[in-house]
Image (cartoon, rainbow, N blue to C red; front, side, top):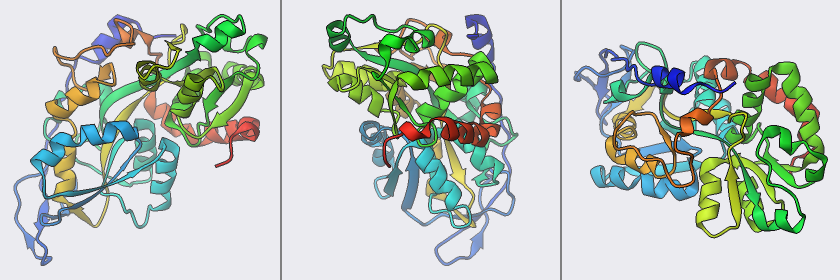
Length: 367
């Protein structure tokens, strides 16, 4: 069932003040020097204060990254930011594969459920960015010093081409139950949850919404109507925009962008409620942590960049009177979210993906 507005507001209005512990700093010569107390749980962390080269792994959309980085580059013009961008599942798999030789300094805008998996593998360095006390409790790790910090939430939506539906004399689906009607056979695309965060939050959301057995029964029926599973959360929206496949299970932001670009689409948030996840950031555990990585995570939750996130997402990790509902969302998008236990979703991630692959992967597009 959906969260009631009251319960969501209660969850999202209690802030936790996090403490800080000490750390060590190191210059380019490798000599350890004293440092001001840092919000890190590891007393023996060595910090490189000289490096100006930063590698950031992200699943943020390509058309968001450049705009978001504007204020960081203005504040830190001498820092070279190396962006490694891919879909959520691919970034997660890459990080897990690099566990013993992590190339990323920080992760930015990756699903919280993925970061929880990394944390279960002891791959995240605890760090409480400056201003973390402003982050609402549902959008950050519960440890005394945070292991990950969220920035916004994104949710399942259907992107439907109105012109193509009119040609077929079909109604625009408004619910998950509508999607399994026989008249939609072969008209739907959906992200593969193994490669797409949107795909995973949709599948995980169905499991939490319906219960395990009922969810898999439902997905069996939905599978009959699926033309293809794709490897990007954005692609179903784009395919709906062109009319190639008129119904795309995607996420709200991408559908709204398609509509703004002139595609004849309607963005539908399923009436049963949307699965959702948090775009979140974390510091990767390494022998030497760069100060610029911590600076980046501090910046990533500042008011300046939060305003940019808010241009795309209706639900922010910071409660602020200046936050606006972007065009295309309902007046109260929080009401659209289902009850969602991110920790439970992360624990079950491998088993859910294995079951999904066994049942449905045959319809996935080639990688």
